[in-house]
Each structure stands twice: as structure tokens, then as C-alpha cells.
Length: 448
Image 1 (spheres, rainbow, N blue to C red):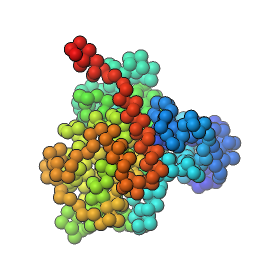
Image 2 (cartoon, rainbow, N blue to C red):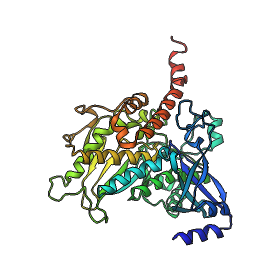
Image 3 (tube, helix red, strand yellow):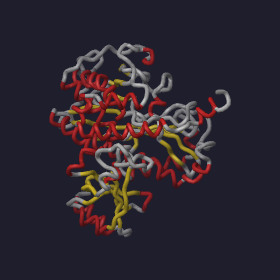
């Protein structure tokens, strides 16, 4: 639809309302319904959105260490605008019109969508057109928000038992749910390339169709919320935690990426003359990610739980490594052909904010290209054992302090954003370290 058609649809939708949302620092959609009249009055201007959505954590606890927002500033409205190009109809809500928003003006620097747009602008200036996609693994339970709290998150019932990855059989067990995921997400303009069971009770994996990077990030954000909302229809709770159970595999949110020329005619990562079909640009792009990864890790591993996934032998990387088509390394190169050559960044978990994860991948890759970085030797065999170039930081605190002191992080994303983001991760760690866990009670209560 063009602009006039979109506005006509909004004006004439029988609900008389519009749903709008902005993505917070944790990748959570925060939004509301507004009347069609209100939408039409603010469409070409700005409106106020309470800055608390960037002043609290994923549990609505206000940061006490944030320079951007807090009690000290009174939580005022901050300017925001609607991006008309993000228009969608929500098929499970009577096709109500939906739009994504972003912050504008002096506050724009904390908005994840703006962070990504700034990196995209740099890529465009260098002559690149980034095409990206994200794939997600997530667990599904026959539970409701009430039941999981009543059970205190214990004894949850997955939609299917046992370990049965790539199961044709199990995809028929809740085929109504499978079918609706495919159908409704496509109607929501979040098309899937594939959907299958993963190893673990009630685990699914979906690959979202490739697109330009901003659309890819929009799709990824909307995918996570869309899956949760569709799940509600079936009495199912979906979780995108990186690692919900120590005895089960974690959940990846791998980012696939390639750079094309301005007209999207040529995949710049592909080189027919190279022995591995990898262009010099592709090699420097990988080198940039490897070099920058320790400086920006919290952008792709943003929670305490993220690091429970990044352990040896759990299908998630722990070393600063790359290789061609090797799932034990941090960066899996897939040279393929002239259309399919791409990089898969496997460090990224399903708990990430897609805007920030994609911004991290692209910005660090561009860093390698701009500085003509040489690619380290390819890992052969088990990437967990290749310690040649170091290992990833072990937890969120270590990773956050590295980012806080990093000149590279500030060069890539700006000092103001890095300061705000680091403060939110420091807060996240602070919430974690004061909690007495079940593990501690079981280990120490009687014996010590």
C-alpha cells in the first residue's frame, strides 16, 4: 500500500483504533492502542512517549544508575514518530492496523532502531546494501501466564516430550499451531523460510526470510512478539530465553548476513576466483567481527542468562573462531554461490534485541573492511578446542566492563549510546548478584 491507501485503511477500519509500539533496550515491544483520529493527527509529526520505556528494565524496575532517564528527571514524554513504512495488519486481531515507532530529537540515540539505522547509513555510504535475516530457536509449553506463576516456573509441561530434532512426526502433533505460525506470520508480513522441531522438549526453530537489514530487524522483533501472541490462542507459552534449563540445549538467534552492491545485483561476499569463493571484502568483514566481538559482546549476549548458553559442547560458541560450514565456531562462513554467500554469526542468542544484534554484526564487519583487517586462519575441527585467538568473556559483568572501557565500541555506536547501554547491563548484573538461587540453597543449606 502507498501512503494514501494506508491512511484510508486506518480511517475506515471498523475498530476505530490503531496499535503502535516502540522497541525498548531489551528488544521488548512497548506500545498502546490509539484512536484512528489520534493516529491521523500525529502521522506526519511527533508525539510524546514516556521516556520510562528506556528508564526501566524488562521487569519494569526503574534503573537507579541511568543518565538518560530516572526519578531525577521526572520521566517526561520524549518525542517519537511513527514509521509509516512498517504498516502491518494483525491477522489475529481482526486485521487491526499496526505501526512501529522510534524516538526522535535529542533522545534518538538510545533508540535501538535508530542505532541500527545509523550503521546502515554508514554501510550505504561505503556502497554496500546489507541483506540480513535472523533465525530463532524457542521452547513452547502448555501453560498460561497464570499457570506458570502458580507453579513458580517449576514443573512446566512442554508441548511435546523428549529430544526429537527435525521431526516430521512431531510436527503433526500440534499441526494446528504449526500451521497458524506459518500462515499468520506471513499475513503479518513476517514470512518464514522454514519451521521445524529442534532437539529438546517442545523446541521449535524458524528461519525468517531474507530482506534488507532494517526490514529484517523489524521482522525479527515482530516475530518474537507475534509467536507469543499466536501461542496464547492455543494455551501455549513461548519463551526465547537463551537457556531455560541447564540440562537442555540453549536457544540461538543466529544472524545471517551478506553485503550487496547498491542495486542488489551482485553479492559482494562472493568471488568465483577465490579457492573458497570468498571475496577479500568478505574476509575482512569476518576479521572485523572477530576483532570487535570481545568489545561489543553484550549487544549479542545481553542478559545474565545469555552466558549460560555460551558453554562448551552446547551448540553455542565459546572461542573467537571462524570456519566454513562449521557449527562449533563463532562465525560460520557459507560461501555457497553468487546468490547465497553469507555469514552466520552463531554467538547471537534468541534473547537478543534484533536491532542491536544486527547493528553489532554490521558495524563490526564494516570496521574490518574499513581497516582492511586480515582474516586469521580457519579453525579445523572442534572450535571449542581452538584457543589460538582467545575465548569469549565468561559472564555479563566481564563483558560489560570490557565494553565500557572500549574505544572501539564508542567508535562504532557513539559514546552516548554506549554509556546508556552499559548502564543498563550493569543494572542487570546488579539485580542478579543479590539473588539467592535454588542452587545455592541446595548446595549449602545443610552441608556448610
